[in-house]
Length: 226
Length: 217
View: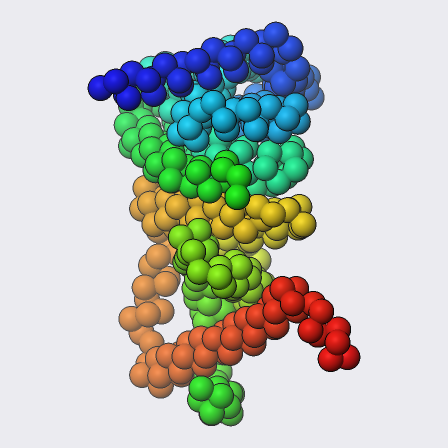
C-alpha cells in the first residue's frame, strides 16, 4: 500500500515538474498550436468556402491533428536529453513512473491541442455535426490513442539523437490504424445523426491499452543506461 | 540444406510453366508471404535480443536487421508483381483494398526501422532502440491486418470474394506448384538469411578482435 502511494506521488511529482517546465517556456506547445491554427486557416482559405465532402473534412481534421501532435508530443522526452536532465531523472525516479507521467502529460497536451484546434476547424470550415456525443467521444478516444502510442516512440527518438523528423517517420506506421479508424468515426458522426461509434471507440481504446502495455514492458530497455 | 536449395531452384522454374495466365501467382504470393514472415522473424529476434544475456546477443540484433533487409527485397517484388497483376485483373495499379493497405504499412515500418537504424549509428543503445521499435510495430500491425478488414468488410466485398473464388477454383496442378513455389521461396529466404548472418558474424568477430585479423594480413 505504501509503495503504491509512493508510486502515485512520484508520478504526480514528475507530472508537476513537466507541467511547470513545459508551460514556463511554451516553445513546444506554442509550436503545435500555431501549426494547427495555420494549417486550419490555410485549408479554409484555399478551399475558399467550397463545400468539402464529409469524408474530406474528417480526413483533414485528423491530418492536422496528427501533424500538430508530431510537433509537440516528442518534445517531452527530447527536452530531457537536450538539456541533459535525463541522467538526473533516471536517478530520482523509476522508469515506470517516468513513462507514466510523460504518458499522462502527452494525453493532457494532446487534449488541449484538440480543444483549441477542433472548434477552430468547425468554425472556419462551416462544419455541421450531426451526432455530437459520438463526435466528441471519437475525438477523445483518437487523441488518447495517438498520445499513448507516441510517448514510447518519443522516448526512442530522444535516445537516438532527438531528430523530430525521425519521430514523424517512425510514428506514422504505428499511428496509421488510429488515423484510419478515427477519421472514419468522425466522418460518420458528421453525416449520420444516429451514429454511436461504439465499435470505433472500442477499437481506439483497445489499441491504446495494448500499446501502453507494450510500452511499459519495453520502456526499461530504452530508458535505462547499459 | 544446400542440396535442398539447389534442388528447389532447379525444380521450381520448370513447374512454373504450368500456369499460363496466372503465372504471377507463383511469384507474387510467395513474395508477399515471405515479406510478412521476415517481419515476424525480425520481431522474434528483437525479443530474443532484448531478453538475451549471452555474449552473442549482438548477433540477434544483426539477425533481425538481416531478416528485414531480405524481407524488404521480397516486399518490393510482391508490390511490383501485385500492382501489375492488379492492373490486368482489376483495372488499376492501386486500389487500396485491405491487403494492399497492410502491405503499405509494412513498407512504412521497414522504412522507419531502417531510418531509425541509420540514425542510431555508433549509438551504444542502437540494438535496444531498434528492437523495441520493431516490437511496438509488431504489436500494432495485427490491428491493421486482422481487425480493420473485419470492421470494414462491407466496404471491400469484391476483394474477398475474388480471393476466395481463386482459392476455391484452383486446380490441383496449380495448387502443387504454388505450394512448391512457397517452399522454394522460403528455402531461398532461409539460404539468404543464413548467408547474411554468416557475414555479420564475421563482421562482429573482426570488430571484437581487430588485432588478430590485422596481424594475419
